[in-house]
Length: 478
Image 1 (tube, one colour):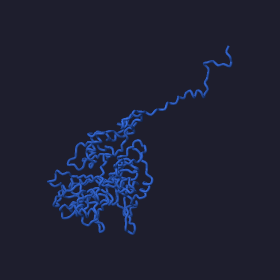
Image 2: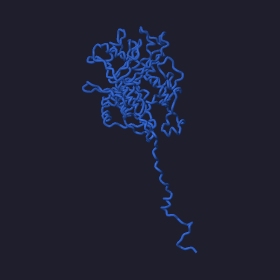
Image 3: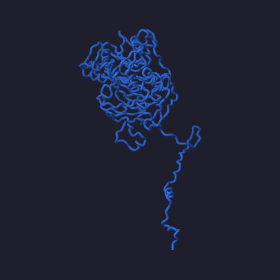
Image 4: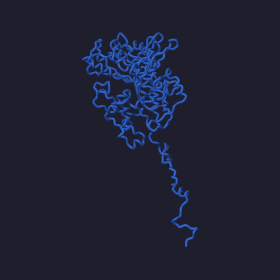
């Protein structure tokens, strides 16, 4: 006979609290940090953490591969098949080929892959939009290449060349200095790499301008000195074009004004004029909202101080203030460095201060060193530096000064940086092929110049202060 106070063994019920606790798993043991044996320089073995893996590199984005018939202008004949290494060497014409090939040997060159080429491993490493590419792979229209910014890292000379002094008649040293700036010379044109702080057009108080010095030092036996086809700002640097004859100066000046003005009945010349390109590299404060785009913002001039000074601003939409059409293509080249970004600019119109106004007012990212159009942004940028973020993982990192790098006055790390605007690339028609030494014009090219290319392409290296800023960016490893 069973007692009433006792329960059967099979009918025992656990309390609710004990039932809930019984389902909880025990805490996992803390994962111990891996420890390895490391030998220091004095051959002493010690226990310590393993060495960190390779840090991600800051990548530079090249423009999309064009779909035209001549993707590599400046050559005698258009190649049927363009490889990746040919495209990279063409873009970085001012970089030694050994430096470009070294990045292919280290397998640090990538291309953007399509959706069906994404793998689970690439998604885990957060690099699913890039894939490694070989040097002999063929380029396709629209293809984009990414490679470390260290490919364009240049050597900085300790001894900097001095700017010619303000003398009315240049001396022997100044003449040699100007002739070292010449990149190309033929019977029709001269191409120079202008240093910063050299004025373009001279007047009574200015004697060391480029036109005055070129007329005295770059005539090369001609009766008249070369004339400036276009102008750059005093603080900017880069390629400038000069016409050695009256005919070459007139036709190239028409080309820089408008392609339609330079057209003739020759189809060969017209195609060469349509391929005209002028590209600038600039370091801007901040980052544009879009990675690339076209700026269509008319500009106009306003007079200040009773007409003693002038300033260029974005024109009013009504267009009643004498607005001029201004169009600029831009493309962000790489990541943000110390709150700044490198961008590539291509002006489609040639207005005064067009690039500086479009960067400062249209994009909201003034050029470093442009105190005329970005004074207040410079003050905020120097007082409150913005954090930088790695492009793949999004992790913040701090500014790290590379060892052994002398900071020249004017770089991005100096208190008062110089203007970071450089005319780097220019593609123009080979006017010497159509114009003889006597001034006679040949519509289809001179008979003795059939083997010469229809286009000429020039690439100018950056000035020292911009090279240092670029080298600092290439050393930003997270």
